[in-house]
Image (tube, rainbow, N blue to C red):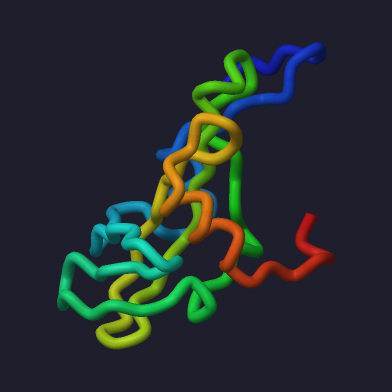
Length: 111
């Protein structure tokens, strides 16, 4: 990917998945109201607090802030299925995505 020195680089979700080991995603996840998540493999629901956002990556939005998205690796707390979740954030994000992003624990040392 070519980067523009005047614009932060977007990373594609596929690049992020390859970098974090979630390539060949085994599960899909759905964000629910109340900062909750549903696993597409087993149907279990869990809270954002059961996840980690240390490897979060902005995957869109460098050129258009209305398109800001981020991708983070997800592991189902019940069946251990792994996948990734891409969510909108910023001014155009839906409230459920914003609540989830705000509730996911993040190591302040993780950039």
